[in-house]
Each structure stands twice: as C-alpha cells, then as structure tokens.
Image 1 (cartoon, helix red, strand yellow):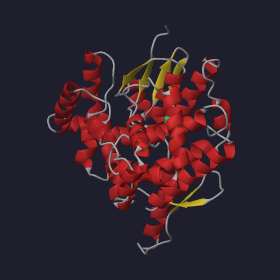
Image 2: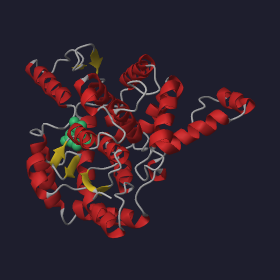
Image 3: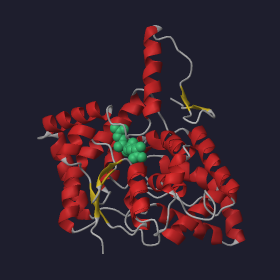
Image 4: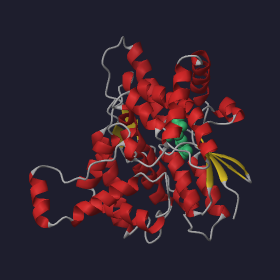
Length: 365
Ligand SMILES: N[C@@H](CCC(=O)N[C@@H](CS)C(=O)NCC(=O)O)C(=O)O
C-alpha cells in the first residue's frame, strides 16, 4: 500500500473536501493536518487546502486533483484536465460558494466555533488531539473572515443566487444525458458540486436548513444524482461524509406510504430535517475537549500571539493566488472606493461579473 498523503485543510471546506474526495477515489489514504507548516504559513498564509506528494507541494484543489488524476489514470479517471479546461465548472462552484459561505456564520460566532470543535482529523488518538489543539487558529481565522464579511459588506446567505446556481447544475445534468454531470462517467465536475454539498450538509450556520431545502424541494434530480454519487462511489468515505446521513433521510422520506406523505405535506415541507453540526461524524469527546482548552488559551494567555499570527495571515492572504472569490473581493474593493469618493451616497447595487461573462450575478451584499 502506498504511503498516505499529507492534506492540510478541514472537512468543512469544499475545496479540501474536493481533494479528499479525489484521494478517496484514487485509493490514496490521507493524513489530515489542521495547521500549516511554518514555511507555508509565512508565504501563503492559512488558505486551505495544500497537499504534499512525492512530487512536491500542491496548493489549491485544482493542482492537487490534476496531479492525482495524471498519477493514477487507470483508477477511476476523473477527466481532471478536460474539466479544468472548461472554466464553467469551477466558476459555478465558486458562485455557489459565494451564495452560501456567509450563511455559515448566520447563527453567530459561538455556534461557528462549536462546529469547529466537532471537526475530526482522524488517525491515531495522539495525532487527532494534536490537530484539535492546533485547529483553533484556523477556526478563529475563518470566524474573523466570515464575521467581517457579514458585518462590513453585509454578506448573507443569498437564496436567489443559490436557487439560480443549483438550477444551472440541474440543467447541466439534464443536458449531459446523465447519470453524471458530464455524461456516463463520474468526473471532477461532479466532485466540485458534491464537495459543496458535503460542506452545506455539515450543519454549520443556516446553510443546511436553507440550501438543503432548495436541493430537496426544487432540484429532485440533483438529490437523485447525489444519492448515486454517494452509493456508487463513497460508501466507505468515512468521517468526512456529511451528506450521506441527509441523503439516507431523504430516502426514508420517499419510502413513506402515501397517507403519511399526504399528512406531512398538509403540514408543510416534507423535507427531512437538516443535520446539526454535532450530529455529523467528526471529533471524539476528547478531541473536542482539547480544542476547547486550546481555544480558551488562544483567547486569553496566548492572545497577543494569536492576534499576531492572524494579522500576518490576513496580510499574506492577499498575495495568495490560490484562494477563491478573488474577483469578487476586487470588485467589492472598487465598489467601496467608489462609495467613499461619492461621499457615501448610495451607489448602484454591487454585482459580481461571472468569470464566463455569460451573466451578471447580483451578490446580495
Ligand atoms: N481555488 C482554491 C480555493 C481555496 C480556498 O479559497 N479555500 C478557502 C477555504 S474554503 C480559504 O482557505 N480561504 C482563506 C481566505 O480566503 O483567506 C482551491 O480550489 O483550492
């Protein structure tokens, strides 16, 4: 058996999920780390994911997935080169991220940090506990990032954008002739959407409640597609699988007899309840205790160090070419600058230009 690859990132990140899904399909075990080595922190900040392989360090999910696909072409080919050559897939995955990312902190920072306590790293107990001790740094970084996005540019979970985006994926599925997004075979296009479904189903903030309802009520073909991906390819995916429980609940819901279904329909939506973050597979009680103790340390005795590291990480994030939503942030900066120059008079609504230049998306901020 080949040695495991080191993957820096967490299961609640769609891009890290994407790399973990590709590793799973290529039968490459991973060792998950939840803080970057110092050299990575200094140059690239805290952006996830990073994958360490025999051929070097791969930053960004696209690099990592392409590497895995070319390295193991005979094992479940993922058509990575072809998918990344069609910019629509990543662009729509980023758009989906923009639609729901801020919803992850909709229940407040305490809920958000509590969800992070439940993220497991897997592996031997000692490894899992060390990662739990390091994870608060990343948790505080994303808490601050999302907190800023909600407080300043007033980002929210954007339901209309989410609806339009999921309708786009559903129409691609329809046009492909199925059962997968690019036709008869599972590809990175499917993994891009499925990775986001995993993050949405991780139960953090309002994403699961709102986005899973849109999935369930408006895009039944996407639910069937997700069930196929889950049962055909991810049966033994393990502790990072957040969507499986919800899909099983959808299954049970569909099997209900018609009288029960009619009664349920009369009382409102028949959607199975979305998972709560503490119900998702993840960290043990010991790991959660270690996380909480370390978080307390980061916010008290080590506060100057925490603030210093976070300030540095926010500084270098702007030079990191791999993180997503860069185009959106550039436009946001220009919009603010315009508002300042025009003496804070309300300007035109901010919109995000689709990188494919096919449509203009209202961001809802
Ligand atoms: N294009 C990158 C996106 C990676 C990314 O944006 N990751 C997010 C977490 S989900 C991140 O680390 N963001 C840090 C930041 O924006 O500062 C990929 O595909 O890996």
